[in-house]
Length: 344
Ligand SMILES: [Zn+2]
Ligand SMILES: [Zn+2]
Image 1 (spheres, rainbow, N blue to C red):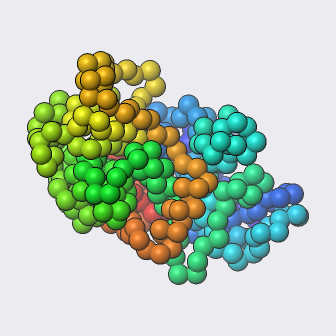
Image 2 (cartoon, rainbow, N blue to C red):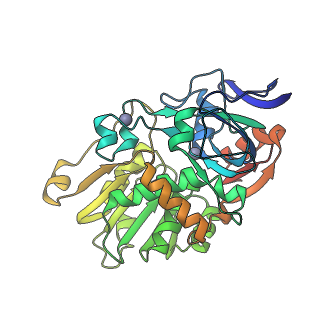
């Protein structure tokens, strides 16, 4: 039996291939993909033709997925044919010092899986053991596919160490900025979102942002934004979800004394920002970087999706078959779509 898989061959180069459906070996399962979501990382990877950590071309592509188990290999006990599952895109080793310290996102042997834009995907043993999750019958596949980005958001919020009712400025109204907004609003924080795109600001408001402000694309507006905090002295916490170095600088410039700056959005490799040492020292700023997710944040994200505490539906702009992936990525690049659900 054959199935269709989308490959990334290089910058902006996709190919739809027909391949034999893989057979699950010892400890592996085969998942029939019911929904895969496009994400900002996919756009980045599509543009650049690769990712320093997650994949090297030529490769099967896509990493946010949910579906049903089509077959389980010998030795698999937790999953059987017909089980509805979501699989997150990385699996830590569970044995290194980082894993043992509960910081599995820093695992020295973190493995990634790609190939969500396909009819089937073979889930390797380590992913079956730690990264595959059963889904309640009533959770829609397209929402379950967002388990991974929501888990990153839960981790990103943990890192901020927020007190109840904090004032948070989120830079960037892309899918991650909006998911952050929604999860922060649910926790009762006052969230202000800054983005150049009016359509995205509108979605931010529907997801619970107290305020949504239009900004220019490349930063330089820290003073103005700082003034939007309740007492004008800056936000308790600023989170960058743009991955634009100039915006990182702004995020530093509008946090209050004693506040937290969270660099959540990854900038292009090799980029640097100048740091106002006086500001960081005398204002006792806490500067944090956030990367990826951990099994504990995946579990909490799954719980949030199952209970419907966070409803990411406004992020799903459209649906498309596999053939529509390139157009979907281009509409994201043009800021027309936030996320597109690919139904193989
Ligand atoms: Zn993603
Ligand atoms: Zn490890």
